[in-house]
Structures are given as C-alpha cells and as structure tokens.
Image 1 (tube, helix red, strand yellow):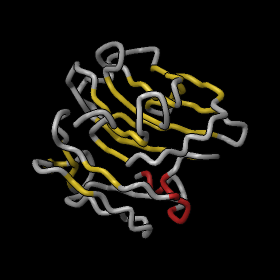
Image 2 (cartoon, helix red, strand yellow):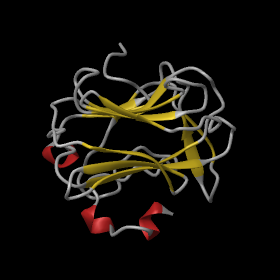
Image 3 (cartoon, rainbow, N blue to C red):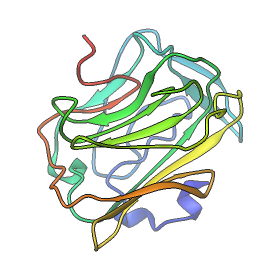
Image 4 (cartoon, rainbow, N blue to C red):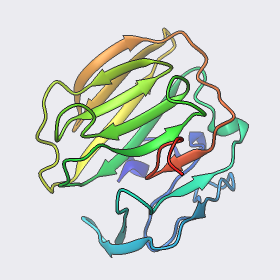
Length: 178
C-alpha cells in the first residue's frame, strides 16, 4: 500500500515482511534477523511479521543511504495491544542521538518520535487497540519534522541537527538493548 503512495526509486529500503525480511528496494540493505521471528496473517494480502517486544528484531549495518540527513520520510504500519514501552525502529548509537520510534513511551497506547534529544509524543493514547495504524515521519527542506498517526499530525518540531549516526538500523529493538 505504501508503494502506491510514493515513488519506489526514491526509497532507501522496503521491508514488506511478507514471509521475508529482505530489502525489496534494490539497495541491498538486507538485515540480520534474530531467532524467533514469527509470521502471522497480515491485514492485507499476505503475511506480516510479529515481534515479541523483547528478543525478536532485525538490524541492518550502517550504510550512507540509511542516514536520516536532509529531507526524509518513514512509513511504518504497526498493530499492538501491549502497554509496555517498545521500540519499533531506531537508527542511533545512544538514546541522545539519531532517531527512535517507540510505542507506550509515556502512556500506554501513545507513539513517540525521538530525534537527537527532542521527543514528539502523540497527544492521545489508545493506539494499542489491536488495530493497524500508519505511523509516518517527515522532515522537509526547512527541517520541520512531523509525526503523523493515521494521516493526522500529532506534533512538529524544527530539527536542524544532522541525524547521521554510525548506528545500525534496528526494527523491534532499541540501540541499548542487548
């Protein structure tokens, strides 16, 4: 569905999770997956990947086309019902640099975006309702970063920092998780 919204040739990575974690963008940003990843029936045709929130994840080694510098967009479909803080995606080496997207950050059901020490949190909770939600993060040419949930803006901040880090791109795990 996301592929119908944006030009594929501008993407750095595509992970559809339809029974594979291989990067479908052509950039070969293929991850290393942990043991225990589970495929479940997806919302749309095909499968989805289920992370357990503790020990299942995948990570991609640092590459220049995975750095969040300049303009960028991130799209993540997510469905969860837990109430504990969990990271969906990170690209950083410490909690004070780079980028992190988490759920249940402050309140059960909220969504947070962390960028070099600045945090945007959805003003409402309740997204841990077991339904699919589209999280979108954009950074425009004026460095305005916007967090959207289900096509509704949940907050903005001007972030002029270069978000480039040597950290791995991680899905389902934070940089400090061992």
